[in-house]
Length: 240
Image (cartoon, rainbow, N blue to C red; front, side):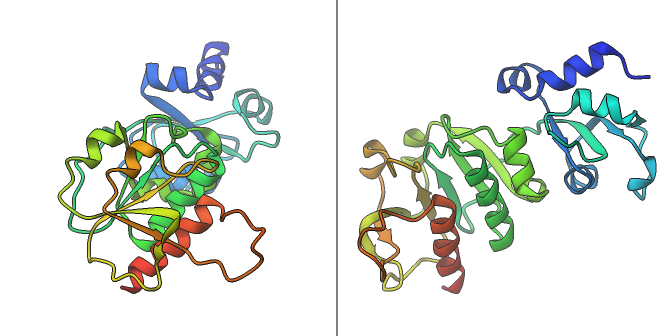
């Protein structure tokens, strides 16, 4: 039977402070937990109300009641499985392909969707500013639908990072050159900015080329959602 301390520990991982302290995070749902179990992520413990939901036998799996799962969960309607995993160490950046950089993206749904886009378009490395939402935030993990297992994510001082990269740096700006007219390199950095303020002035000075997605519709539309804009630009990058 699961103890009160175990429940308290799992609940604490909903908060970034405790994820940082313990080096662990919590993820919920059969698909997400299953993806992580089959990946390079190290599992600490997986709690399920039905052991048959996973094909393979894992020593870390423990049966719990529906009530116990509800007590641990951060969801209004828990979904059979909840896992606690160790946060992996960041991997060195490889510059043989495109790298996506996020400057202070704050919305968990946006980050989760962008991680899925990286997975879809084969972008292996995602580099985030220190103020970008935590990728192990439960809402981010829900939105990634398991794609986080195939994208290497790191957090760093972007000003320092971008001044040291050996490839061209493209930034998304409203006043940039149309991406449809830009000859894109085979490798580079794509910087996407904050939902409200775009790319910060400090990073704007470092960007090599400003690109934009031209607007054909109503001029009163302010801008595209950052995840939507990322999908369009990554599509153009992969089109070559």
